[in-house]
Image 1 (spheres, rainbow, N blue to C red):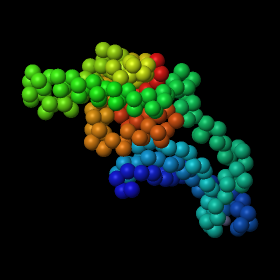
Image 2 (image 1 turned 90 degrees about the horizontal axis):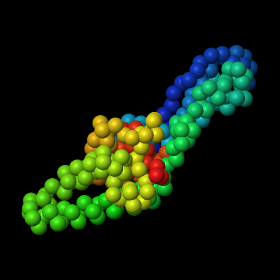
Image 3 (image 1 turned 90 degrees about the vertical axis):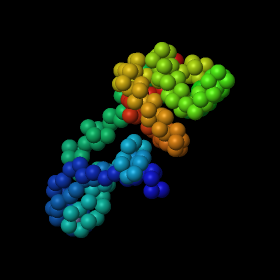
Amino acid sequence: MIIYGRKTVQSTIKSGKFDCPNCRRQESYHLKNYQLYFHIFFIPLLKIRELGDELNCFFCNTTYVPGSVLSSHEYDTRNRLGNTSNEENHSIGLVPCDFGKRIGAFILDVVIIYAVNLALAFILPEASLFVILFAFIYFIACDLLLKGSSLGKLVLSIKAVDYEQNGDILAFNIILRNLIKGMCAIFPVIYLTSLLNDDKRALHDLAARTMVVDK
Ligand SMILES: [Zn+2]
């Protein structure tokens, strides 16, 4: 897919000299790391998973498993690959809620928004024209007053929290989160970004540094 999809991001993490079994002499190598990302317009936004490392001989271009030709001192994966973000956050008590609960909460909120908007339209016929603005205000007001919850989230006992502090979301991030969430409604498949990472964070969660958890 051109607009969004998966993209492999390659980076050279180390260069040096090694004994190439194919060349049978010391040659230069490049140690490369590969990561699979979710991209929108080729901008890597979200890491899906680690694909691993690869070592190439600069001279014969043979590909090796780094650990088979480098010593553990030269190739230490623990320093680089060990600290994935979800491991860090599980240590401060953040566990993502079930994706189905988020969908359920969202459907409940949409029903509430349309019901209230329909009722308003009886009093003020123009109200139906502003349903998107109304939805935006509804979600922001809920996040502020109910501390990361909406009425739908309250029913299903889930809430959005700050990803780094495991606490309340800053007002700025609440607005940013709902702006992006609203824009994604034009292209709802973007919500599925939350299925691509262990912390189940959608694009609006990544932008506003939030995560949806059980209460
Ligand atoms: Zn070689």
